[in-house]
Length: 158
Length: 158
DNA sequence: GTCGGTGCAAAACGTTTGCACCTCG
DNA sequence: CGAGGTGCAAACGTTTTGCACCGAC
Image (cartoon, rainbow over all chains, first blue to last red; front, top):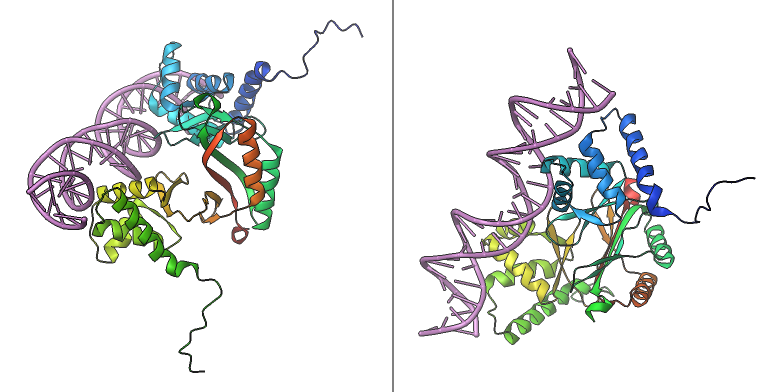
């Protein structure tokens, strides 16, 4: 084994991730015979390359800064498409508008939201998963997805 | 059986509950030297007497049916007031508008939402409380309130 | 060449606000 | 009587939609 191959780190989520997701998108579109347009690529790339969430307006502003020029309607339509394809998720943090975020394999819809500074901290905890699975089972409910919003003050806002 | 004695069921939450809540409201208003108006009473009564949740529009429609006639602005303003006083809570089930519901002593912001029929089933489970308390503690987060939305299909919608 | 996507502007939607009048306390 | 509430309509901000044109396949 003359492996010239570099020691690939055990975890390398952000790097190849965006490209991979872009391939998934391309495949999903082809499967539905929908065109892979420049605009769709730009919006998807923005979401895929950053784990951040974006409002429709922020998507527009960010892309405008990058020299891309595209209409609000396209942004809303594309974001809805990404959500429908399961590649993005929509969140409402009571700001009067929605936010969109890449959807990685495992759903991560659980957030701590600071009521002081407005920052959003995603979290993931197996105990929560377990407890909610039990709730769904008890209710004869087949869970599809979930959203947890824990409002409070973060440690920086005392 | 000359029933003048009605067999009162063991649990009778809804009955005295509304009246009690109305007293709480009256007290909160007096404390803040805010008037207890006919409109506020009507809206509060609707929420207090039914455990259901209502959109602003549904409040308007329901009260119109009861012969009350009051403006949208008053409804929104009163609902916001009830939320601020801690007597009601606001929920967003991704319908494009908000829903309001009486807030009973213990917060109950946790819902199973059927994506088929749209029905909403509140739930309450100590394990969930415990797991989320742990999450908040780990993050140095002082929790204020929370919302859990578990989307799925209810047992009637298979 | 065709079907769908895009951009623009206008409309739609729930919600908020300004203001004259009214009502509770 | 006065502070505040109410109703109406207009304003607001986000999102959706109609339509002519353009671009991907």
